[in-house]
Length: 344
Image 1: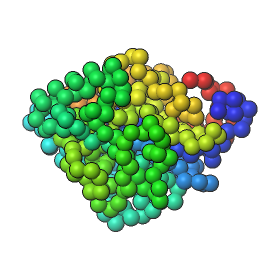
Image 2: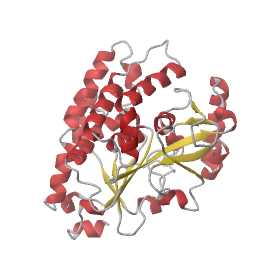
Image 3: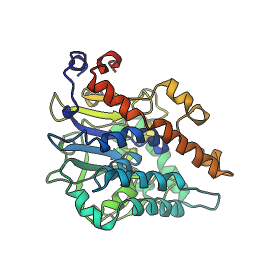
């Protein structure tokens, strides 16, 4: 792919998938990139594009498939940024807040149109909890997460003792990545009854947000954050050698699963990255953001006594991020992308 871009042969029609990492509020710096692609209808002109995401990535992409995508995306931003939490909040009240955001930007009568979208195919990753991590009793769940971390640190395949990957998809057939031998999970078709629940479950951060129970059409159980299985990028989304997977990411390191964050030796496999074109903001851009950093979940604690300051900072980050999509398109159309692209 690098050589093809260097030769000037890259076009947006070669993008067959977009990966949406589970990055919490950091997704806000991708907003300008997303909205530009949506407004210009740059993707899915020749064939449907797979939109595969967990947690925040899934929330982003669920707006992409709506009949009025840009309008839905902006409503998602408004609802997400305006959420505030205090000391009295529990995992259940936080879950209720996320549910309100989802219910607001995904309207009932729009769901059938979204799931019949001809340009995009949505795939929402969740994690069905097993054993101790399925408990809603905090200390038991915490103990289960400790065991999950230790088992995963030794062997990634042992994580399946505690979590099962469940991907909710729209389309006639499951995405190809769900059919690979190393997928080790279950694919469930999206419908009117389970779309919102799948998005809610994919956003249910362990210990912070209550799990979602018994999603329609899927195996019974407690469903949690999809990032536990596929955090940044942990699947091979390209089907053919010439396919390109687009990834907007806030950092250079690609972490496979949520429990791998502190394990520096854990990186996404090279086979998953072969077809990936990753777009990242520069350090110079990040320094211009409020506080010189990308919005993250710690901001809820930092600005607990002054949520209006956090909200103001996050909207400023959205404003500063708005040109990123246009800059990317200009690089592609002018072929200058070959002057800035680097091998990963």
